[in-house]
Image 1 (cartoon, rainbow, N blue to C red):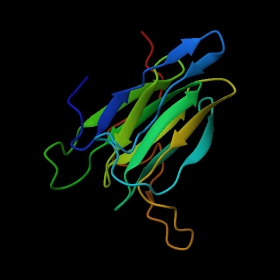
Image 2: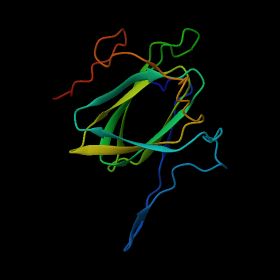
Image 3: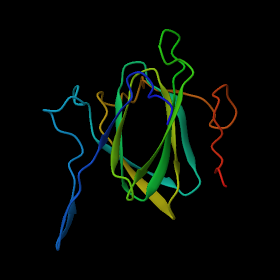
Length: 154
């Protein structure tokens, strides 16, 4: 993988399994990835659908795919960043339990890889403000971001 975008962090999630099922902690207040709490929400993405691109000016996102698989992609378009222009691609979900933290100012989105859907949990640092959302979007396929969401066969 190319180097991580400045501020992007990952945490492998330790799965504890027994004859009842499995458990994994997503985020704890006593670990370095924890900054502050805004809210927790769940979103789904249908297979083949891209939810993105968007970024936040203040909010830090922390994503975990709890059912199915997604391809989460981040692009650093921040003018003053030491990793300006870097793209990171992560595959996370049932087969790779991983938390991915996306800093403010970094474009990101995800594509559903599982049928019929994948289920994502986000623990952002800010609560969603319905009247003035901290969310800036562009079309997932027609933009200046150097990334193609198509599957890479071969």
